[in-house]
Length: 186
Image (cartoon, rainbow, N blue to C red; front, side, top):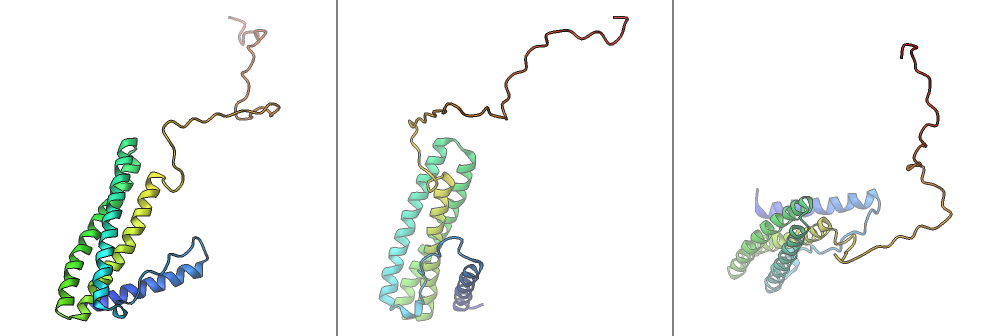
């Protein structure tokens, strides 16, 4: 399959998926449209945007590494595994993007617009996915839900006049009289 055909199929799948998500109802706000047609962007602008995208992916890698250190500090294996999975994906996408950035520079220097569009599209898709993975890594740690300080204390005041907790009944009183034996022999 030709590389440009793969990119077009991938973009068509993204567009169809976005339309299907809108038809199912608004569960969360749709992400801003960041993918644009690579053919509409001049080659020097592709180079500039690709370099900026790779830089932002490196920044995301640094952020996810920070989340990994937080997970290690809390000694929570579930969080650590979750963040480590996201980190592995970010590293792979960054490696692909760096290779595509070099290939994009070569394609632009050779004036091969088809190859330049393909490489730029790969970088754009990877940038969006890395941004999503950064958010997911923050969710692994609980960054978006809440942020607490280790020195945080919580005081709870129980108001007077509340009914007793039915899940915690008061202890039973000890028996006051002994029942007769079940057998006359004892």
